[in-house]
Figure (cartoon, rainbow, N blue to C red):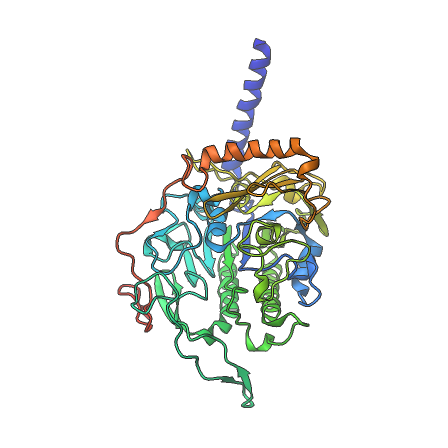
Length: 492
């Protein structure tokens, strides 16, 4: 007995020392770069590698041919919770326990004490940038520059949001009169884009550098791409982490004029998806041009399932954005890292947003946050190992707001309220309820749900939920008339 215990302690000690040596000896030249491209509301089958027949995505097609598709990758049903999960390595209810999403001038946001993936990587010498939609709080205390990012450029919330007419409420406000029709160089009407919503604050670090009107959103994808590729060039000689959360393809839909009508029946969402594909191509081409491809891991994903009411396609998956059916939470994901990620492969291993932080920490040699429970796990073996590797995760909990609605263990998924049981391996579309045939599986999954609820609570907050960040007097960054909050004016 003593010898077995001693042997186990010896193995554990060697593992800890090895990990510490790995972190210590990983030089700047050895550390891989990381890019996470997070598209807003992109459906499972909105791109070619996941089955789209309407949207031409040649750059993503090539990315998948040179990388690995992650076909069981999970996010959250809506924006803010999904982003909190990615940033903190936790179920969203643990670190951002809110019922839906964050709105402009909300008094709450991701707590400044939470340790983000950017802060983890910054601790081992990474340059960090966030370019795009943040949506984890628009008050100064919650902005990316307070959460580990050296540089930020983008919108702090969704493109359908804006301040209330009194300039303070956290709601979109009543629509303003529609702007006049836009015309091209030939004088042809190209349609009215926009519902007269208030201007959106385009931030650079912590300054509002532009008031973005509705039809001006058509320039955002190009401008994000320019900033992102500039960041890559500027930091080519040091390890960097680029987080690129697109405003596209969230409704209202604003593809650039040159992409309007280009998809084959995909509508404006398909057009904008094709512009996103162009952006991905620009990022990957920059990596190739700088000969950084063998030391740069790129992850392409979506923050939640597609909104089918706005033209998205979730393919074989049931449901859509906002739900805990597979179509609301399973998202198209590709990992690309030449000479590391096996080319042209797919994995159905269960993976998720919350696995990004521990995985990048492992690959960079960084330590995980001390004294904080993480729900994510290191997915290095899933990314670079054999395609048949099942990975370290066999369980996933489906939260919608504060409510645990479903549980997956291996191939089995149980919807808790209805008691419906599906085998996702043989029934990815959740069409055939087999609960009556497998009562023992139902009981086993309910036990998993009960244990999770003991930690994070049922619909209220459990002991494992951490506090939200709060401010006493939240103010909008930009009011209904386009006046910028004092202290956030551009100095240019």
